[in-house]
Image (tube, rainbow, N blue to C red):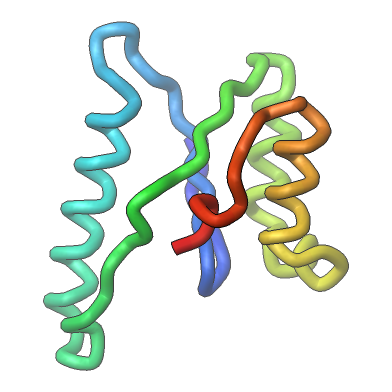
Length: 104
């Protein structure tokens, strides 16, 4: 539905079929995008994605809000870094995490 991001992260809004595991979708995105970027220029031969990822469900009534959020990443992150926003989100929704393993 929407994709976009910044130099240190991306957001992808998509509808997930009940027949496909989220981990498989992420694996395919990382694998194919890594291959693609490495083919673009020799400067990117060492490109890799971090091991982990964050995935969150979105209510159908919030799809427009999330779409606009993704489109406006550049302006949004002038006020708040991705890292501070992500940790704030985990805390807000009481998601247990160990920060040693959030960033790699």
